[in-house]
Image (tube, rainbow over all chains, first blue to last red; front, side):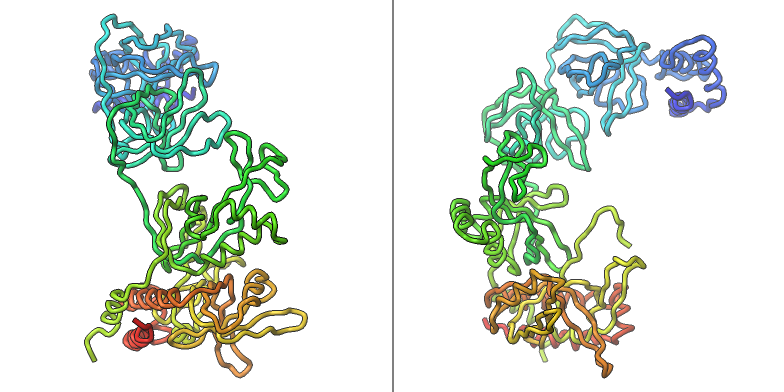
Length: 408
Length: 188
């Protein structure tokens, strides 16, 4: 670890408590411990922080941070002491990590990581522990608790009942979250390692979720409400998603009226992109990629046993903004009046083959006005419904008034 | 200038033929060879793509080596001159298949030409064209009326409209009249 980084951190910690430490002094003390005495950096940081805290007479940081804190209050940059229950353990992603998982108290939950170097005792799932002098930092935009060699871990024998607090979907933040939500859309897995992916919704909104393949993980049942405790909330490209592998999920009774975060756009379809119409998809489970004309999948190579599908990739334009839209089979069938079966039989008997379907569909929808509603995804509108706009005489009257202004 | 990181497709502006006919001012946004070319419409907005729906009244094949098609598309206010050449083979073939008269929807790029006599002509280079129905034509008239009025309402408050004022001396009331007349031709 870079010493100037550590210096910076110690200095910030002290400044936060109103002290004005001399950075050079901090660094020289660290350097002395690390370089002359062979102390490891984490320990040096702890020692220097503790010493300076005493010198500046501040409390609440370094080795003196023994005051117990509720988990939901702690923020990156702090040294903390917490008591919590291990509610999830996940396989470490690197040999330098001994344990990763989620620790929770009644106020909230946080991801933690125990470095192999820390030589810390392994914590057991379902037990309570007191962690003294752990460091909170930020990993991929979410707070993360680091257990290092200076952290004292002690097991708490009594088992306090723990009820996770449920967060509305629209209020989830990167980190750990518990939701009560209904499984509303089952999507095709886009990756071999994916067990299931789709959309969960509660009264406030919807969120994408993933369950990665893992021993003992079950799929969710569609249209069922679940209590999901301690899922991992990740952020990618500004969008949140839930990974349920850390979570405990239990089907619950009752139903949820899912609040849709639907976007609705009115406009004309000004462009039908190549790759619309009848397409072939890779049959390998969980792949589902579009095949080339020669049945080539970028991952699974030649796949003669492809399956057919319909889709339209288009641009819906309201004169102010041009929006990419993607329509899947059901929407395409309803819009064009051509079913998948019909499309396949046309393509197989027509000299133009699949192009014939592209041309027919393009000629049916291009240049016409539609209202598309659906959810936005990666700058594109995934269309749930697409209806033609009908001529409204009232609108004509209103526009005549507007253009005429004062009667002539 | 827009950030380069996320490409945003240029919207297709709605404009009546009589307004497009008055368009004279063209500029390039940026120094790059691939920078988009815009025209400033008299109602006060830049445009490098337009969407029109009207009646294709005439089409002609021209050229020997370089075949291209010309066509006339009529709206309630006047005529759009459209063309599709071998650089837009899809559009050219679509146009070739359509027999006038027919209601058509056209997406294309406005282009300015100066004739040897010094007259300025505006044509529309077709990106795609499709046969539509009368209802779509009527919807387009409403849509174009609304967007033209929106532009006129904002006239004088945007940079593009100040440029239009400078270049054309646009009189918003004149264009309101054009919009009104166009609307009266839509049958209830």
